[in-house]
Length: 279
Image (tube, rainbow, N blue to C red; front, top):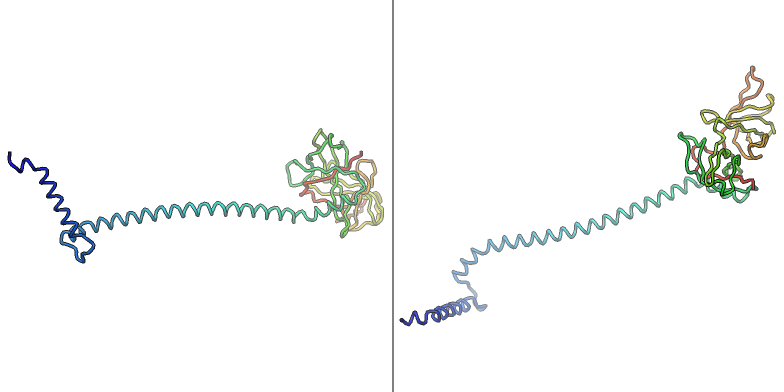
């Protein structure tokens, strides 16, 4: 057996070790120049390194962009919540401003009324623009009875608030009641004028206006005269404000003087009312 075959493995290890020592020496930090082999290897690896570097940077930027998008999305959601909150507050303020006159009249009514009042919310109405028939959320359990008069606080003169007539309770359940307003054509109201004390009858009409006549065809009534309930017939409580005359007509062939009346209550906007309890 030859020496080479006998010590082949050892010789290979020795040769590899010698080559590594030479390479380490050639690549030591003390050198100022690179070898031709290193230059060739650098030229080969440089484009590859550039590609991997750009890929790494792109991936890093992508993750950074995803993080920014997530952050912007969270900020956007917070802004949406804040805007929704501000819009809700704005609607609440607008609602308060829109109801400011009503709220003021309501407060004055509670302070000055001589009647026992039951507060009720409107929870339903018949189709149409006018609240000629509607449902409230109080009934027998709350002391409301059929025939009770329904009112709101209305301003008669500047800073003078009175009970303005809305209508009467036509039907009642344990926790609800149906109200028929004075603009409904089934209602007839006896009235008197404050200035002259002349009386008459007015009723609702199909076009939700109040029209009627005076008992005395020579009654001295004019546009702007204020009407109050007279209490005749006992259908409605006495001395409730109805509204004011907007037109007076006297035809030769008629024996009575006819009038039309603007109601004090806005029958297109009724959300809360008060029922005069007989108890």
